Image 1: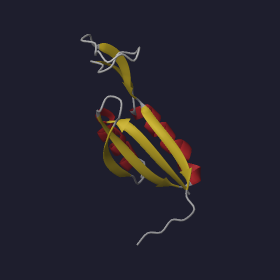
Image 2: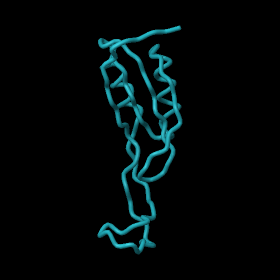
Image 3: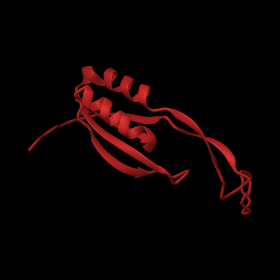
Length: 108
């Protein structure tokens, strides 16, 4: 058994959740916040048999899309304290996924 931790952008979370339901993949959904943009994310915790990892990864990859977004940086890239008033374009979204071994699983 493995534990998949998948962090996705909120815009992709509902679709991903529905795809998990259709595939009979049980997931716990948590509301989380990213540190860089301080934007809402959703983290899915998925306990899954090892033989179904590729299936889950395909679903995550197909439903979690990267996007371009503008933000106003609070610090300049050179480390100075003066913030820029000009927005910069950054890539957001996609998915960050961790696959961890599970030593023990119990359900009560």
